[in-house]
Image (cartoon, rainbow, N blue to C red; front, side, top):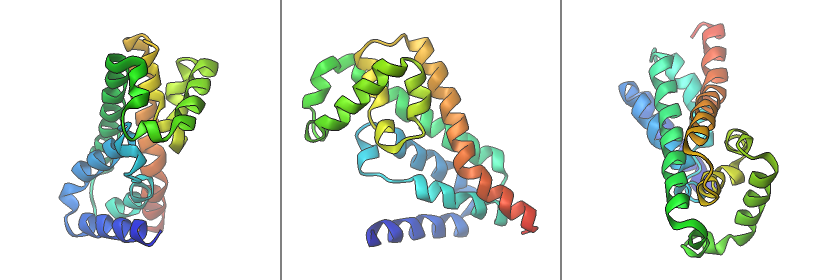
Amino acid sequence: MIELEAYAREALAFVEAHAHWAPYVAFILAFGESFAVLSLFFPATFVLIGLGPIIEAGGVAFLPVWFGAAAGAALGDAISYWIGHYFKDSVRRIWPLRNYPEMMERGERFFHRFGSWSVFIGRFFGPLRAVIPLIAGMFAMPHFIFQMANIASAMAWALLLLGPGAAAMKLMGW
């Protein structure tokens, strides 16, 4: 937990010192949080939540940072989808996913239960976020439907993470 806190402090301190990099930092964090394999080792949600107040306090425009986070999340999931689509069931044998068979099984059950909605809903649940796009690709979910759910959920997710902190700072007059 200490390492995660140090990582979060360093990332937020960087954005405070270099506010013009905030959209790019948001993109990288959201991409890492959404890309199938990286998301298992790249916990960026807390940093993105902390980014909201910092961008408002630092005078950074909200929309470019929101767009950066949404684009990073959508790209991470899109690449994950294509990995699942290309490798199909053999993706289960690729490290590190072979070490988490129960996560893949849970994701598969979720996908079969909710279909295309699983892509949208799964974005908001950490463990599912790591595997749902892969599974959607494995089971050949139509690409257009996947991308609609992917982009819409990425936009809503980025707003949910960044918006409350930025709005609170704005209300406080900072």
